[in-house]
Length: 444
Image (cartoon, rainbow, N blue to C red; front, side):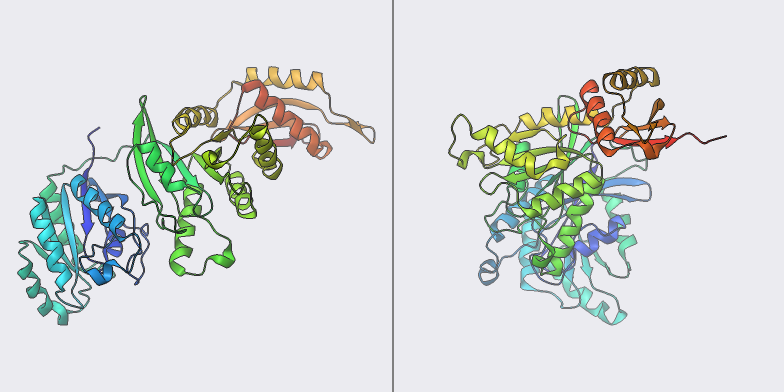
């Protein structure tokens, strides 16, 4: 399958790049706000127009003004992300603000794009009324041949822009192929090292890394192929306590992180070795567990801990006490910054994903169930005893089992846990939750 063509959306801050990206893909993926600097990393979005598939890169605003440069501590990092997007792009859509008119930073951006040698379409945004059409003509001074008046809010002019983009890219219509990638969400509270881990896994700078908490705001997707397996990593914003989410920008970023958990196959929950498990870590772990996702626990910044022969066991015990409901999740001690054991993560993800898709035959399952019942039969309660007649695997992702019994009300939660643990041990189902259902046989 050929790699999709790439369209990068660039421009100075606050001209509506993310709004236009959302309009092109037909859903709200990129965070939109009227404050400059909201988009920081580059965000890859799958798009389709007239049966043609391509990838849109939403980028941060390009500053070329010394005063504005000082307003964000990581503006240089944002511009480096934009530069990478320009290298990857087959076509560039430059966005300008038709409401304000031509700005000196537009001229600087246009000069940069002309020097890049890439094909460029100019989208003059915020052209909701005909009264602004006169503003359009001054943008021809930027020296870009193809200029379009658009409105990311109403969608006006976007169809013409996309028609031109598809024509420039020479994309042939075709059916979209379903992705076979393992979807992996990198989650945790702010500043635990999520972006550093993504960069370490990719072997290059993909997400902006800063000591400031809250640097990542969008959920950032990246695919990489290793040993014929495709991994799609999503670097998410740190999930804070609700009381600390005091910006509406950050609120939407947290929602993206929660959505990433809901839509992933496996969650990498990162913990800070210098702070161990705190209340917010437990809440994020609860989100993973309640959404029935595979999970790998990563204890980051392990290089900062003074160790002796008992340290790792002590840390493991402390983490397990606080995260009892993720007892099935393997534990790995790493340093994303120093690249210590980060590539062991791939092997762990592959193993967990295999378990996530586990499928047993009914015959094999019932042999295992008969053996565990014989080892430890259920206790009688008030003269009545639970009888399990047979079991069937009724689902995957995660493995789901339904047990047919005489009366489900006779099942004690401790015995249900015993069955789960025995099945997990028998099939070596590490890293994934198991869903068990018990159905009583209807009386005649």
